[in-house]
Image (cartoon, rainbow, N blue to C red; front, side, top):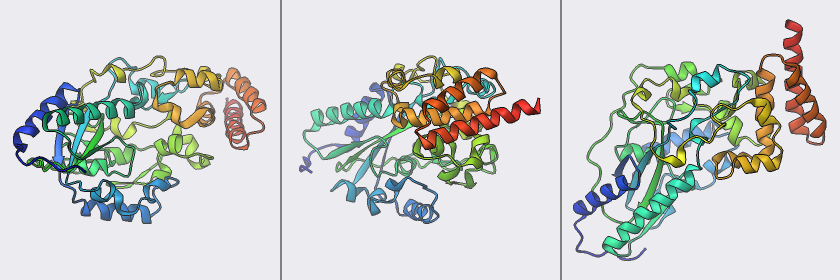
Length: 363
């Protein structure tokens, strides 16, 4: 990293950075040191328990995740930011979850891919710092490298890590994204530590459809619907399929029930506004998308990362959980024939068909 000029008023610089951050659309900014020893222990225990499932990247970077200076040499501070993402124009989540013929998509994925939006804004923030003081050492991250972003955000005063493992802000709930700038600038540390306000509340633990929050502050990803529908590449375990309901991309249940989200505010960032009809889509219509249509309709969206194959896998389960319908049976049979060569996908479609037949027999 380049050498930092000596005559800089870092208190004044931080005030400017906070102003620039607000101008760029971030709702809050904080600065932390790089001591993550406490969180490192939790991470190791989590990995040793195998709770990361197939997310091998959580373990392969060794100690870099909890030692920022090993990831980016000479790092002494981390600037953490948050940006609200709840779309103001989307169908209410509870309403979609209550209609099994519709598909529920996690609200964070209804707009433009947040990785691109946040990374672009953080780069602009870094450019403004450089224009003000000259060259300095930094690197921007948005969920794209071995970074303990929630731990760093907690240390910087942006909130506390809740029992569901998401960051909660006392004035804004948890509907926000996080991003970081690793830097060698000796900026003043945030002087406000956020106390944990979860108290005796267990709403998220009690609400989780698959019991993924195995104990307070510990999520077994292998049971989590977000992991199952997004991270898992192969077959979704049969034991979780019924509990997935109509959730086809992610799951927001632990946030929907959190009392602190009564303080959350809709985003004003148009990039995060919902792309209709994904806020309340018809399952059969989505299941009929060929790969070209899927790619076109998910352009610029985080949804595209799972690919068309897993998209169909997830929707097949949702159709299997929907009330019996002749139309559903017909489209499942059509797709089963179309994808007979794909063992994984055909197996999920056959499960959905069996589920539909069972419901018909119960009538």
